[in-house]
Structure formats: structure tokens, C-alpha cells
Length: 459
Image (cartoon, rainbow, N blue to C red):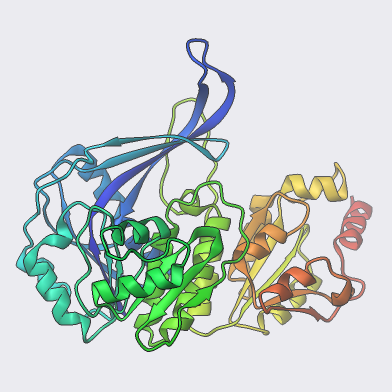
């Protein structure tokens, strides 16, 4: 399945560190930088997300000829890029975070750019798409007449998801869905007379649907979810978002647009696709947002950089999109033994993928004492992944797996037969999104403690 992303790209730079003191010259925090990483932004971020989800992606865009464009190209190595010349500097947005919280953002080269030319190769790249995402970041590409003509021609044949920008062009007619956030939707409606009610997302969505002549408008409202208005629906539908603690919402709109494209390309109904996309955006933020995306860091000399991957969450999204069942289990898995292998194999048989939520070394020490774990977490991860029944491992530092569960939202959470699912603290959480807690047969006389004792006797 081929998904085409059309739009403006930019270079995002994430600078992370710790802030423990104020500057003596001014009342501002001093950030001790621990690492910096380049990342594709704008339409490049949407394309990167879709590639991580396992889709074949073609990115249709324009590129500059400066050093920032070279760095941006390296971040798009896994994406098929069809690009023309932008004729302008590459926009660079540098975000500085301390302890995971945004401190400041520096923008370079983000001034209004001339409308770029569109090459014949860029137009040809639209053909054969199962769905198109237009990620408009106000740099002028979506105002190009030949590109708009091509998109309008395709709008009646395939789903087009248009993510608008206040400085960008209006969507072409008949796109499947336009996805403004609340601020963008209100800005688009300010010149209308009479203006729609500022307190009615549904009324605003329907007004914009008429203005843009689109088949649907999905107005996103952050933690309050989203409101969907569609031509075929009598009244707007509110879609609640899962409760999520968010330090930085960057990338949530891109995640939502990418999820919509994947679901609509697979032939799913827009209403169901919108519900899944809202849930995926919440899971994306709960899992660390853009900071958890894969990509090589640029380490700062003298500092170490810790990366937290998002592979497990991406796997869960892929399996759900194809109608599969996501199974997860958790534990320390110190001194892997036959009981573990049998329980994990039984858990994997319950669905289409098995994700193991693994207690980190520090978590194991707090739970089991200073002498544990016997095997460090890197080796425990390697051993678990060596089992054919384990598809992914997600390491967590907390004492309980609640954060992992909120991120993965498995359909089935599995524990051993020595547990009572009615008394598991995770049960209410898993059932809150329609999941189930199940047990697999307990393996008597097979435990880490028994194995450790036997090894001690041998020694």
C-alpha cells in the first residue's frame, strides 16, 4: 500500500538537558545539555511516522540547497523523496528541553517563502497512491496551481487528508477530511459573517466543511478529543481522547493525520478511522511524543545520551490497524527458564503479537532487593527477543506497568495462573479501553528463585 505525503518540510533540532540552577546574569534557567538530535519536521515528520508504522511512503516536497537541507536528507533516508528546488533557506526549529519540558524554541529561515515550482516528477508521484496526506506548513507549496489541480483531480478517487496551516492555502474541494486544530479552525472562520459560535466545535466544523467544500472536517481539541462533522452524518460527533499527561504536544497533529491516512487507505470508515487516530495521537504523546521517535542522536562531547525507542508502540499500532489482537505481559524475567518460555508461548497464542513489559534494573532492585537482578536488563531484553514468541520488549523504570499499558493499550494483558485477574491492580485500567486480563497456566516448580538456589548449591 502506497501512501503519499505532500507538503512543506523543515529541520527540527531537539536539544535535551537538565536545569538545576538559574543564570547569574538574568533570572533564566541554565540548561546543561546532554544531547542533541536532528529530526525531520512538517511533512517529513508525517512521512517518518508512516514509515515506522511499516508503510511504503513517497514524500512529495521541495528542498533547499543549504547545510540544513543536507542534514534533513539524512533523516529521510528511509523515505522515498521526490523533491523540487524550494528556492529558499531550509526552515530550522530548535527546541530546548530541560527534564523533558520545553524551555524555548529558536526559529531560523521560517519567513514567508515564494511559491515554489512543482516538477513533472512530483506530479507523477501522486499517481498510484492509496491515500494522500497534505501537510501544509505555510511555506507556499500547497498554493502552486498545478499541484492543486492534480490534487483536485484525485480527490474524487482516493482519500485525501488535509492538515491545514493558518498561513497556508485553503484545501482543494472534495477532500475526504480536513484536520484543523481548535485554534486553526477559529482562525479560518474569523472572516465569516455571521461568525460561528466560539463555544461550539460542532457548529464550527460544519461551517468550515461548507466553506472548504470538503466531505468532512475533524477539529482537534487537545485533551478534549476531537469533533467530526461529515456530509453523510446528520450531527457532529464528539470523539473523546484517552486521559494523557502531556509535557509537549509537538507532533500530535501529524500522528493523527498519519493514522487517518493509513486507516482510510485500508478501506475503513471515516468515523472509526477518526476514533483510532485520536487514540493513536494520545498514545503517541503518552509514549514520549517526538522525543521517542527513532533516529540517531548527535551526542554532545563529554555527555552520554539515553534513547528510549517507540518500537513497541509502533508495533501495537500496526497490528491494530490490520485488525489484529495485541497481547502484552509483564515481569522481571530474571534468569529466564522453561516456565517463562511456556507462559510466553501461551500468551503469544492468544493474539497476533506479544509485547513484554520488562522491569528495568532499578525497578527490580526496588521490588526484589539489592541482590537482584541477577541478569542485567540489556541481557534480559536480548534473551526475551531470542524467543520466537516475543515480538517486542518495552523496558520501564516504574514499580508498576501502568505507563506501559497506557502507551500500548493492549487488547489482552496476560499474567500467570498464580494470579487472580479480579484482584490485579491493572485490571480496571485495561478494561477501561475494552481490553481483557487473562491468565495462562502456572508452571509449578519452575521459578527464578528455585533456579538461583540450585545454582548456589552447584557453586
